Length: 93
Image (cartoon, rainbow, N blue to C red; front, side):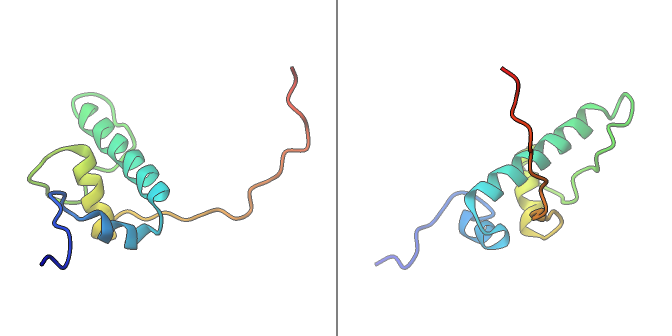
């Protein structure tokens, strides 16, 4: 019957997961970038926010959709830092 399940989401989650490798990384990357796009849009009339505008043209115009489209087009990437320093001290109570 059906070879694959059709999704209403564009770009498809399966394709996005191939770009970033895990659901957690996708959520963190997309949400961070969507906040940056939203912050940039909100600050257009005021001072500069230091963030780049959306790097794609989107019909939807929603920050999260633009962020997902940027990830799909390899305009946004991430790297995992392996050398995270350890904390030797215990937190004070």
